[in-house]
Image (cartoon, rainbow, N blue to C red; front, side):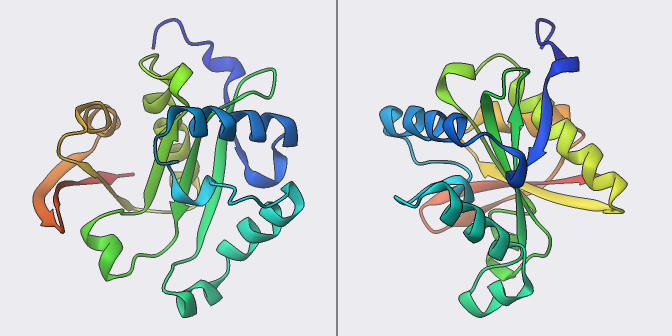
Length: 177
């Protein structure tokens, strides 16, 4: 992370991102043929205005009726408004998220991985959550995702346990703010 220009990297709520940059970000994910992470950042062939509406609805308590929880989507952007990654903050946890998923889901575009951005993005969002009076945050990752485990640990994550969730083993970490 030594080469990162931390002073020009910022976290922005979904309402403040550039439309063109968002679709470039999504195209890169699609070309990689990886599952878009976090799930909330995918576009599902919606136009930008429809996406903004969907992301706004995700923040509402009415999401419980759909089996989801209220969440807010943020993006990490550079000085040129290029999206480096996305991070979804779930404000409450249901039983499934207590097992796997936790309060935070995040992903970095393929071309920007292994540069320390995930660690920085998680730090920045934890700072925001601390200011919003959160005390403890649950973050999980697949047991085989060593990069994500290291990112969580670098941000103060203490592993509570590993659990079997369907076909995968999940590491469950708590971060005290």
